[in-house]
Length: 283
Ligand SMILES: [Zn+2]
Picture (cartoon, rainbow, N blue to C red):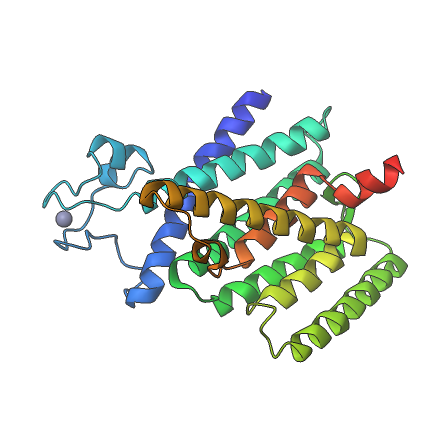
């Protein structure tokens, strides 16, 4: 039964990923989001069999059925990524909260919340990588979804679970922690003339303090920084191997940090990897 639920989540993920990829590419070309999908090269309206996530692309050899123009691997890649995130999220909540999940509204509310939040994070992260700018309406959707989750959920020390309404005094503590974090981060932002942060970094970091509390939010930030550094080194090594020479300049290229913050929030919230909690626990 668990396997079936994880597979169903993965299939849902490919559909959501397909919708995300279309939204990410069309919002820049000005094409109407409500219209039927067309081939960007020959303009043919795509049939139902050409719209199946991942499989259509594989079966057609990555090309348009009519004009044989190559369809970028970006589409199936994003569909597979979203499917993997959906499957992993579902697995995390089944695995870490076993027993009686089927009739358990907490399980379903938590899963649904994280699937929505993850989808918006994938959208914003990929949009940032592709267009090198923040999608501001997407940021508002993320903040709204995060605030709703924060009001109705709680960090248990291992995962972020949606419980229904939480105690008002707990909510006050969270609002206070988020306000302190906001003042601190905006002070840094002001001091650095906005150079230390990309647009969107500060509100999303404040949101993670509101969701998790200060120390787990710092864990998310640390994970984001470590993954970003590893990614930069991997990219530098890859380009050095391709070009057969090692240069220092390749290492300092500016990375958008937003996708890495999302990885941090996801890893802490869904997988409960609270590094500072683990370090604190062993000391
Ligand atoms: Zn075509």
